[in-house]
Length: 421
Image (cartoon, rainbow, N blue to C red; front, side, top):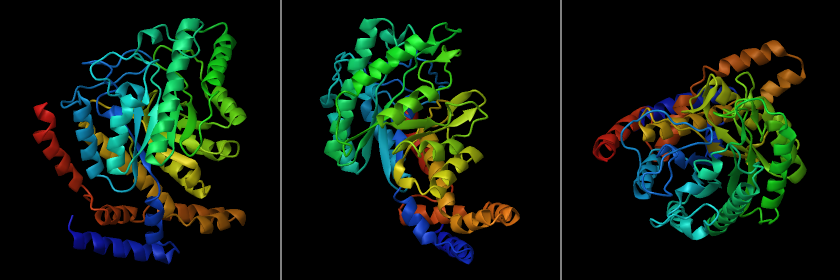
C-alpha cells in the first residue's frame, strides 16, 4: 500500500472516530504497550531440539500437515522468528518450551536442564529487545507414556517431573532477571484418563502435592510470574483431565498464582471472554493463550472472530490491560508457518485495537440508564467503523508492511529460504 493512501485512510478514519469521542492516536499508544508473546512451537511443529530429528510424541498433542520448510535447527528457527518479527508492529515476546534448549548435541534429560542451555536464547532476546516466557515440557518423553506426569502414582516418575518443573522455574527467573522484564512460566500437563476413572481424587491430591513442592522456592515477581493452565480434555484423556479448570482456579486463588485461560481448552459453548472479569476478582493477573478452536480441536491459527473480539473487549472494558499477559498458542503445519505467525499475531493486535477504539464510557452510560436500544445501536455501529485503516497506519509508522503487503514478503522468504531446506 502507498504511504499517501494509508495516511489518507487514517485521516478519514480518525475523523469518524473523533465524532464519537475517540482519539485514535491514544488508542495506538495503548496498543503499543500490549506485548504479544509469540509461541516458539509454530516454527517446528512442537518437535524441539533435545536430539537430532526430534518429533512430537505423546501427551495429547497432535500437529497435522507437512508444509515444506519446517525449522530443523535452532539457527533455522531463529532465522524464521527474525522474519516474523520483521513483519509485525508493536512489542513482542517469545515463549519457549523446555525442549528448545541448546544442548550441544548431548542428551540432557529434563531433570538436568539449566539456564546455560538457554543462555543463547537470552542473548538473542536481549539483542532484539524482546522478553522471554517459558514452559516446562511434560510430554514427548518416556516418563509421559503412561499418561501421568506430576499426578503420577509412580513416585519415581512424579519426582522426575517435579524436578524438571523446579528447574524450569529457575530458568525462567534467570531469563527475567537478565532481560529486565518478568518471565511468565506456565505449567500445563497432559495427565488424564481415556476412560472413566474411579478415583479422580487420588490423582488430584498428587498433583496438588507436586505443585506445592514445585512452588516451595519463591522468586521475586519482577523476575518470574507463575501460571497454571487447565484443559477440558485431550487426546487420550477424553474422560478426565486431572488439571481441570476448577482444580487450577482453586489452586491459583489460594496460592496467588496466575491462571492461564486458553480459549481452546474449554467446551465450545463456553466463552473465555466471560470468564475474565470473574477470574480477575480473585487473582492478580492472568495469562492468555489465544488460539482458535474448530469443533473439539484447538490450536488452529488465530483469526479475528467473535471469540477473540469478546476477549479483547472484555479486558479493555474492565480496564485490565496491565493485569493480562497476552500469549499465542497454535500450531498448524498445513500452511506456511511464517504466515501462520503473522496472521495470528496481527489478528490479536487488531482485536485489541478495535476494543481500544470503542466508546466504553458512552456505552456504559447507556447501560447504567437502562437505554438498551441505544447501547445495541452503538455496538452495531462500531462493527462498521474503519479500524483496519487505523491498524494499517500503525504498521506504517512502525516500518512494517500494511494491508496485504506482508504476503509477498512471506512468499519471497518461502521461495528463497523455506523451499531450500
